[in-house]
Structures are given as C-alpha cells and as structure tokens.
Image (cartoon, rainbow, N blue to C red; front, side):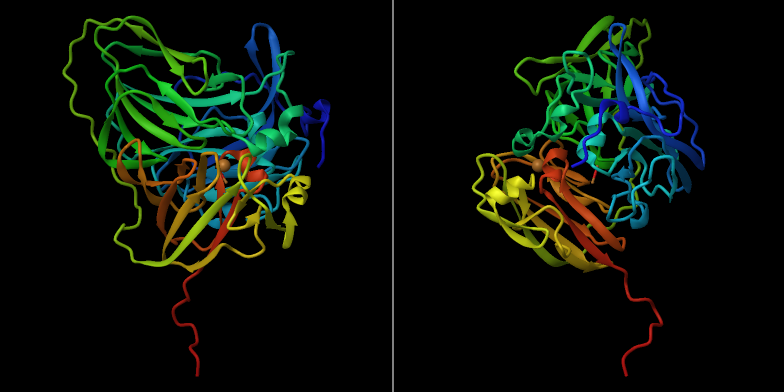
Amino acid sequence: MMTLSRRTLFKTVPAGAICAYAAPLSWATDASDRVELAAEPQTVRWFGDTTTEIWGYNSTAIELQQYVPVTIAFTNRLAEPTTVHWHGMRVENAMDGVSGLTQAPVQPGDTFDYRFTPKDAGTFWAHAHHQTYRQLALGLYTPIIVAEAQPYPVDRDLLFVADDWLINPEDQLDTESLEETHAWAHAGRMGNVLTINRLRLPELEVQAGDRVRLRVINTANSRIMRFGFPDVSTFIIAKDGQPLSLPRAHSGILTIAPAERYDLVIDIPKDWAGLYPIYERSGKQPFLAATWQVSATERSRALKDVDALPANPLPNSEFKTTQKLTLAMQGGAMGNLKAALYQGKKLSVKELIANKQVWTLNGVANMPEAALLTAKVGEGIEIALHNTTAWPHAMHLHGQHFQAYNDVTEQDLWQDTLLVQAGDTQTIRFLAAEPGKWLLHCHMIEHQVSGMVSYIEVLGAAEEGEPGLG
Ligand code: C2O
Ligand code: CU
C-alpha cells in the first residue's frame, strides 16, 4: 500500500487554483451542456484562523437538466490517480467511473470527458471511485441536482450535504488512521467534526411560513446519521433521487445511511423567528449540525397540500423475475468467518486479515473473479441481502435502481442504496437495464475496501437481424 506524505497529498498537479470552499446554502449554477470539473487540494477554515487542508471538486453543486445531454470535462489536479462516479445516475457503463472496472483511472494532470444524458430528475452526488475509502474521506465529492422540467413549487430549494471528518489535534485531517483496519472490521471510520454543505454550523436562512425543499445527502464514509430538523411539518417526496408516488408525512428523527438521499418538504412555522437548532443524534452526545435562521413575517398564506414530484422514466414494476439469488453478507468483528476466497485463493481468516480483508459476499472477499450473476438486458432479478454480520450495511447497486421496502417511507421505493440491519434480510428487485459490469457493494466505504464488494454483469440483448444458427 502506497503511503503518501502530507506534502504529496496536498500538492496540486499542475499548479491550479487552491480555493477556499465557500458553499452557498442553495445551489446557483446554470444548467449547461458542458461542465468543467476538477479534483484538487483545497483549504477550509473550520477552526478559527487555522487553515485545514482537504480535497474537493471545484464545484459546490453540479446542476443538470433532465434529458439534456452533458459533457463533464474532468481534470485531475491531484498528485495521484482518481475517477468520478455519478452515484445513483443511470449512465452508460463506460461512464460509471469505477476505477479498474469501467475505466482506467485518470492520471495526475490528465483529463477525461464524462458524457451522459440524465434520465432522472432528482438529488444525486458525484464522488471519487478510486481508493474510495481514502479519496472520499479526504473530501472528493459534490452534490448533483438534476432539475425537473417544471420547477417544483417551494419557496426555497436548499442542499443539506452532511459529512463527518476525522480531525486531529492540529486541526488537520487525520490521514494516519485512513489505513487502520480496526475501524474497517467494525462500523467503519467515524469522524469527530460534522459539516453541512462543507461548513461548520451553517445557518439556513428562511422566512417564517416558507415551504422549503431540503435535499439531504449523507456523504460520510460510514456514519449512519440521525437528524432532527426539528419537529416541524415534514414530508418525504423522494428517496435516492426517485420520487415517492405519494409524499409521506414524516415526524421525528430521519435516519440516513451513507450515500442515501432524502428530498424533504418542510414548512417553517409562521410564528417562528430567530434560530432553531438541527441536531444529528447518532452519537452519545447530539452534534449541533446547523440552525434554521428564521426571519419573522407578517404574511399569512394558506399552504396547499404537498405535491408529488413528476415520475421519472423507471421500468414498469410489473416485470417478471427470471433470476433469484441470496447474497450472504459475512465477516467483521464478532462475526464467525473461518475462511474465504480472495483473488481466487482460499484463505484462512488470519491470511485474510494479513491482506486487510475482513468481509465477504457469498464467500468471496473483495472483487470476485467472475460476476456474482450474469443477466441479459430485460431480465428481472431478485437478490435477498442476507446480513448475518453483527453490523448494519448500506448496500448500493450501480447502474439500475432497485425496488425495496423502505422503513422510513413505508413504501416500496426505487432506491440505489439500502440499509440492511444486523441479522436482517432485505430483498431487492430490479430490471437489468443497461449492459455492463455493475458494482454491488457496501457504502460504508471501509467495508467495501476490506471485502464487501462484488459485481453483476448485464449482457446486451442480441441484436436484431443477427445471423441465426443453421
Ligand atoms: Cu457511491 Cu460504488 O458508489
Ligand atoms: Cu458494510
């Protein structure tokens, strides 16, 4: 494993702009057919006058328009290779950004054009998919908003991008702990500083009586976050970029696993004025995450019912299932893994640990030699995710959304990431829609690097007019 010194880590290649990340609380970029995106070292001021070095993209949010083709011209200004993955966006396999599977990583100073047409309107995010456990922890991600053709009726459309960072006593990222396998075998590497939109304790400016669309994204490597907004009239209108057919009233804590997104509609009470805290409650002590800064108003306006978002062009859920698979998720601390296949060889637990592998999917640690499952375009697949470990896992499928029952919305939803609790089994079903090799992995990214990753392969439908036999 290559270890990089702090100097190499935060060096720019070639010399590019190092800019302080000042994320506005609402996105304000123009949708265009070409976006220049760069990965680069950046600095933030989270602790008084101290400058903290992180990584990031030169973008506070990428705004795209549904059905409008886009070229994202990507430049790597880091001193190491990287790729960009469009989490939750149904793009062609060659654009999926998985280093070593769908493309070779983009070398320092090099460029790569990502081209696709957003099929779905909604809330997505881009993140590095090369040594993801390091590059994501260092900050290589940005939210993506794919705008609906008709603006959804709210007074404000705000991002709420939550991340936890592990900061050392010098107020710098704790990069030493990135390789520590103890956290990998447990719940993952947890941070000690929470940011919303890359700011500490931002104030979300609203007016009393506003109807707000809040796009909540959990970009943490491993922390399952629990937000209280606080208890105001809240509806969930979308999960993982996909609209609910019926908005669902939600009260209490919103639990959101790594990589998941919830689009909420929140009505700020008419009689509010001043500051109202938003807490994150996954730890023993609540973290103050952000505050609503509410300006008082005299206006009295009756709010209409919360509308559903227009449906995205997803497959008809009536498809027939032609393949079923059970996926045994095993390993980790307090698991009883004895041996597993790793890179084609059967290894004992001791040997696996020596290779920093602690988790398995169907008896294989890390990428298998052959796909978990091979399907043709148009086949219906069902996978029972059987979590026999002592830990929750946020399972993510690339390339196609799956249907599964969601505990928070209590509906069968199309989602791309699903939290499977310890000891639980959840079944996902999806239509194999795009040819290519698609990852299926745990989005507690330390679990992915230490074994919990596999892939399915979708083969293109036979072309019409192909010569038949005989
Ligand atoms: Cu968010 Cu493999 O991805
Ligand atoms: Cu996991």
